[in-house]
Image (tube, rainbow, N blue to C red; front, side):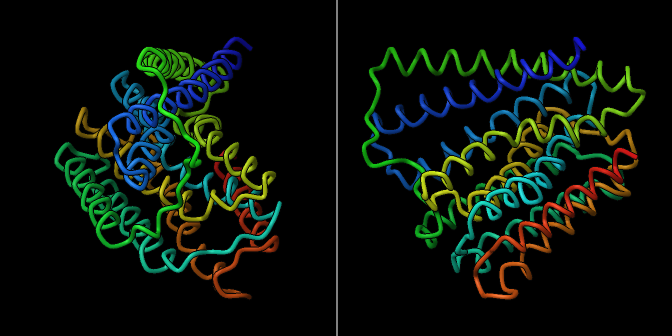
Length: 312
């Protein structure tokens, strides 16, 4: 019971901390007069991936590499199988052309690169982390130069720079909440895994990954209820690209990540590749560049099957 409470409190701190960090980062960017397009692609993306990043680094440093890997692989599956599914079940979604020209190909390249790095030797090495972060940097430069319209502006036009003391306060509180939340979440997750006799990977790929995907889910549901299309498929795919290239890349640079539970290599990464690939035909069938409730049902069925088979 205590482990469950630690996990819930940890997740709440991660979500609140990520939100505060985002507020501070956006306010700081506006104060420095950085164009909104750059804020949306770099600051917003990094801040919304902050929970995954902090949890993965902390887990890897504390000697729980399967939590770090399971968190990211599970988050990527949850973003498409759960978050996207719930979003399109609540209302159909039009998909931009940039989906098949930029977003989806880069997500597949990032996914295949990660699988290639980790599959053969069971380790994500430091130099592989450097390659992943370099690829992310190249992708961001490409987007800025050639694909500005591919980025959905998540920031309302009435954003006002906060006073400097408020920015510093949000930055401090956000960082502290993320650090504290990751401590509690990892302690709770490891405790839960040992009390149920399951591996860190199982807890990472289910509870932890869904927990760190909650900001995306909350943002998607709010956008649908407000009848805003700001949360697009591009945002979720962007989150998946950041999870792989930034979260795992930065974590591997800090400390190499070794696979402990082989289920990650024989099961989880193939589910991640499969659901990532499936998005392409779903977007084009039956109506081109549109996702509807039927697609949502397919995705949620796949996600439930994945969780059922993984846990059993």
